[in-house]
Each structure stands twice: as C-alpha cells, then as structure tokens.
Amino acid sequence: MRPSTTLPVLAAPVLAAAFALLLSGPADAGEQHRTIQAASPQPVAEVLRTGGGTVSGSVAAVGVNWMTVQDDSGRTDVRVRGALPEGIAQGAPITVTGRARKGGLMASEIILADGSLHRPSRDHHDD
Image 1 (cartoon, rainbow, N blue to C red):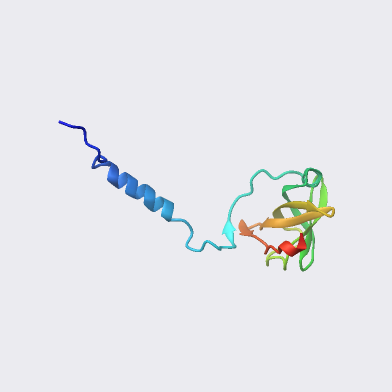
Image 2: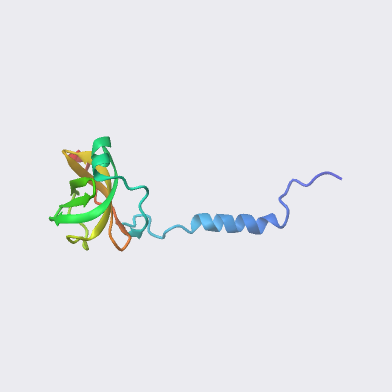
C-alpha cells in the first residue's frame, strides 16, 4: 500500500477557515478613519531630538492645518498637509506620529481622544 499524497479530510475545513480569515480584512482598503491604539509614544523632546516618532499629550493650540501638542517634556507645533481632522480641540488628549521638520512635527497619523485614526493627505512636492 502506498502513502497518500492528499491532505487528510479533516485538514480541509481548517485550511478553508484560515483562507477565509485572510480574506476578511476591511472592505475599503483606502479607509482613512480607524480605531487603534498608539504604539510606544515618546516624550515630545525625545521625538524632536531623534527626528520623528509618536507623541501623546494634549492640544495646546489649534489652527486650520496645524496644532501645538504638549506633554511633560515640552511642546511642539504639528503641521498637516491639508486641514486638520474635525474633533481636535484645545485641551483634548491627542496622539501624533510624524517626522521632525523645521523644529516641529509633520504628522503622518493623528489619533483623536475617541481612538479614531486620521492619515493626512500626502503631497510629495512639499518635502
């Protein structure tokens, strides 16, 4: 009797479930607003010193396309390409990921107090 080269009958349902799980991602790959938790925020002073990262603090001031974020280590202006997302108010907690640029941060991700994620538009001509 020669050994079988097919998968055991019980393995088929497991493989089908795994495949379905892989395909069950978000329906809209271009989704701009998700709920997430920030990974390892650093003090503002450290992020500015190292050239970028994630800061978590409170909003000290708000403009159309900028805000000032502060924590116990300092404060920094945060700019975005385009307008800031709705829901950013002075005194509100906020988390921003970005790169240091011209003494402040250029935001690539903004996480509001409700956990919603916003990714500002990217304009490569502004680099």
